[in-house]
Amino acid sequence: MATNDRMTKTQRREEARRQAAELRAKQEREQRRNKIVGIALVAVAVLAVAVGIFLLVKQNLDSKKAPTALPPAPAVADVQVPSAGDSDLVGIPVSKQGVGVRAAEEAVVIEVYMDLICPACAGFEQLQAAELEALLDPETGRDDVTVVYHVVATLDRFSLGTNYSARAANALSVVADKSPEHFLPFMAALFDAQPKENTSGLKDERIAELAQGAGVPASVTDLFTVTADFKGSPKRLFIPWTAAVTATLPSEDGRVVTPTILVNGQPWTDWSAISASDMVKTILGEDIGDLDDGEQ
Image (tube, rainbow, N blue to C red; front, side, top):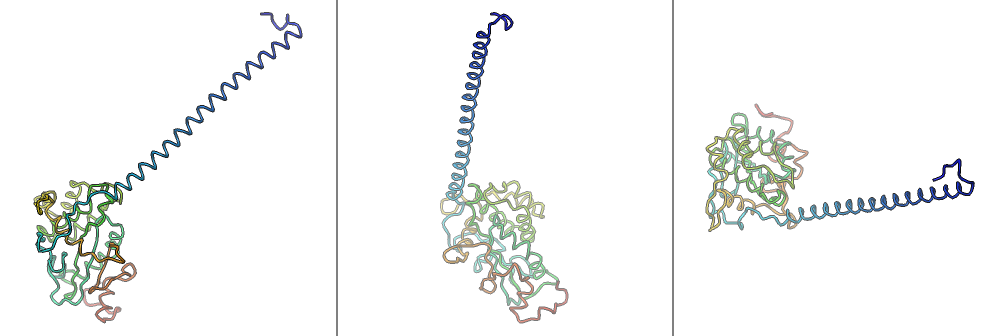
């Protein structure tokens, strides 16, 4: 090929045109390639979003369809009741006299319906646990207050098919049966370690660790996964009891809500603003400003 020095003006012009045409062709190829890559990346992104939406919808549908560990609601007379349980109250009563014992001079009955994966139930525990403990203190508590804990399992669908609500309720019932003095500490530990909704919840081993950390003997935590036959269907020991308790949860316009707090049978809806001790004093017509000896 002739060098530029030896090219005529016409040849140089043609060479420049040829080089410009090659440059344009290269640029067009790169633009087509970039366009194809861009389209592919957009397609991948759209597909990823679609897959994400599909999995989210499927997860929500699966959580709603997730089977519950509870059998059809049985009659209390047909189930094993924890030794600290009350078949009339269908719950675990606690008073100054201890777990499983109603107050000697009972004038106020506070009923607490709670699901152990329910965030609002944990909120009630955080706000009112110390107040209730003061009312129930063996030495300085009140002789006229009984607190009844109804541990329900209405939110199993929020534990991705692992039935955490029912498993945790069963474990707490086992403790109420075999180690009732650890019932309240274990319940507090479960709320402190409460898993988020729409997760798989705590594993049985972790539930047992929390119980043992609250003082429950290993011989008792070994019973958390023990099953008993319930009308031909193997269930954990106190799953039938949990089903019976859950069936007593009052409804609001056909909906069940946790926590549901009743005081002498009436809803206590302002528990986030009024302390349990003040509420008791108000019901009994006592001066809220005057504290009995030893009350906090």
